[in-house]
Length: 121
Image 1: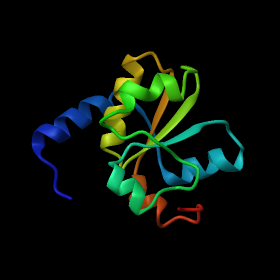
Image 2: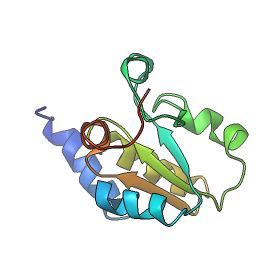
Image 3: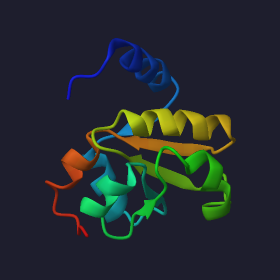
């Protein structure tokens, strides 16, 4: 997908503050049984079309409103994914501003996850 320059500038600025991992690192987390909350930040229709089994759905449009109710522990590791890793970076940046200590964006997002051997719904 071709993105607009203003959007890419916003994403690149957020990337300077946000931790990112790729699919290989995420699989290492799973293998190590590292405690985390996997959050799908895509739109409702994207989530309904397919998602990682067990992922919490909090779309980019509502996550800031609902995250403190759904994940009140601000020290919890939050692994966020979207379609490719751009929207999840923006969400992670906002969660940092809200006091969450460990938001992580999954680079490659759903495109990488659906090609993985992870269980999907």
